[in-house]
Length: 153
Image 1: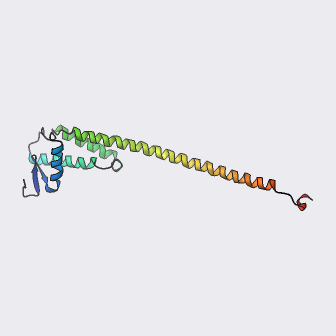
Image 2: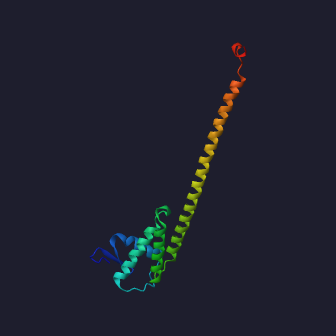
Image 3: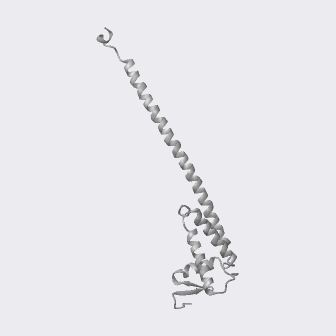
């Protein structure tokens, strides 16, 4: 229902027209999401829905785009929404998956830096060995050269 203020009512929440499809999809896929929501005040409900939409936007980001603080804030927002009656097990699972991916990426990044350091060190060793080999080759060439008459006399 169009409210004349740029919002549409979807499942008891007033959302901006640009968010209607997102909110409808939430309720289509997860109809239990707001069945037990306690706040009755429309403005409070709208604020919670905005928090939910913001939380979903955050969870949609790639793990490397999020700081630890942003993830903690997302976890706190999720807890707050659950406390007021939202059923968000489906979103909690996604957030946990995001946390696991972030930790794996951080561990993988550390391992990649470690391997890169090892490669750099091995290149130094290889360069030193190549230099030593060239010196040995140069000495071998000069040792194996025939001596001229003037060199002997």
